[in-house]
Length: 322
Image (cartoon, rainbow, N blue to C red; front, side, top):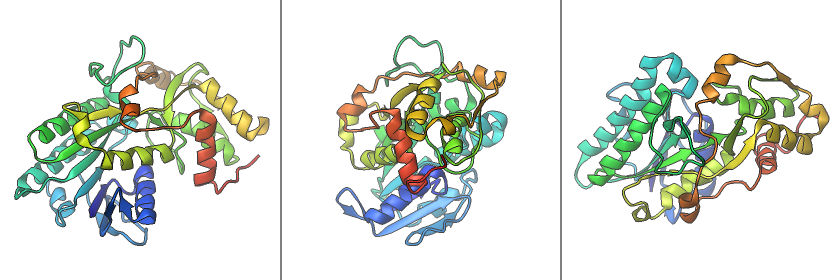
């Protein structure tokens, strides 16, 4: 099996590639070739690395040269950056994805790979009335959400026409993200857990009652792998599935951090309200109906304590600063 990961240098992309290299297979298919594609090179041993700018029209040709059987499309300009840089967001998130889909279609000759595409809860927008299900109407309130919503429709239509076999993984907030803070508007959810556990202060720009549905990077990797092997006939015409997660407010997250790390860790969180962040958060959905995903076999953590423990085990070698 030939596997291509686009966006392989990102946090989830790297974790996925590490898992693929460790397992050596996806489902029952042995991986004979793993290509990691991103704008920066990879240093992982065992995979081929391709540097590519997805915004360039000729990028897909290099990506598809080996005719990969399985494509994980994770590359994106994240929410905050896509809002600040309109042209870049559309060039990568929409045009880059459409160019990839078109290049696959142009291959012809029976080539029909499985594509696992990461989407986002940003495809939804207020007003909300209870938990959001897969069939909730798309009214995105950001450029990023609009780009993802359009690509969900493209994924479904290109699949319907038989050009590839696509599945969209609509992700909740990914927490706890390791490494340095990125431009994602939701980054503070990870910051208030990751930074205190590392002995650093973290700024909390919203009030404690702000909530969201969360899944760990570990669970997200499992979502992607399950999506790669799922019998896609079970999806029908609705090719994108809302992933499960743990519903937790900021207060719930801090309480879990206190249970896991103690009071000294929690004191490193500094409340500094930011009106711009609060306004953006107000447009996000927070609760989701994921019966469909659960019936299809997707699973997340049972509680937020488990999400914190996963971060400590996977990214801190089991040790944090008390």
